[in-house]
Image 1 (tube, rainbow, N blue to C red):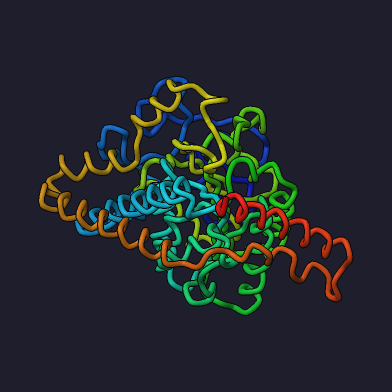
Image 2: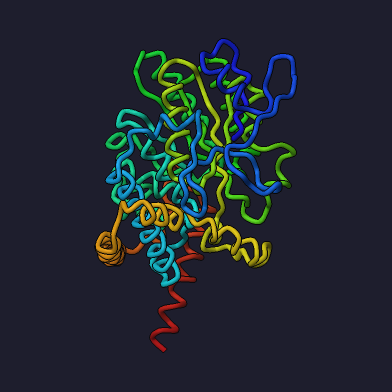
Length: 400
């Protein structure tokens, strides 16, 4: 386990410093034994559940999952399975021409479900475009996520109904929105927190750096949750940073922690800690969920062009769903009846998603030309006419 902190006057600073590898005011390096036995090439991180499904103790974070029940564990497993099923169906629908694009979360279910279930109803979530599991946790109907990817709306839900903001396509900008919102609720005296999701690629954006600066200076109650899935499209993490991402928080004056992003219990515990820290007035935290994007960046991407099968296979052995299933089985917390019932529920969800998407209207092909200029524009009119002629050419072919 590693935790870095340079947040002065924080009640949790001493505990974080004792648990970490760096971060003292004098710059003295400290080392501790690892929480679990790992290969020397593995990064140090918070882990409560090994890839083999074995529960390991952690003095720092066990308290945050101490009250979890077998029913809670089955609920976390159900969340991950149904989220993966929805994601797979959306990918298939895109391949069938029903969606224009889809960003899969395959492999990142534990990071999203664990962190999503750590939030309270009054917390506010700012996602990117891949947080389908977090949306599930916030009560957003999964079919509402698909309208934007079909091109029929700009987001299919009211953000204030679930305190879950609309998906953000511009990389990293939602961290600024989250920081500003967190500063606002702090001024209002609200007992709630904000969590902002972004990827390892977004961590290279200036928006994220500005968010870190403002949140630290104004002690904003925000958790920055970075899902490091190892690849920013085709760019590996080592081409983006010289240090682990969570250590960047040290330079801004607040704690950073790296958690096993394929361990739903660890993600739940660490995010609970970070959110409680925010709510109690201790300011921001950076959580780096070290996970892996097992599929493509989006359906327009071909990951086989830039990474090998051996890497993917190594991470498939750390599958977050399989990990929790092993724990449920060895602990006798779930039987075959539970898994069979969940499989049936999963298939029913897939059918409902297909039916809803196919019942959606087709996108308005000419909507892109509207509202470009308030009073119209000759060039836009010309482009609209060219596009209309292009569309009409297909009708000529079909009628031939």
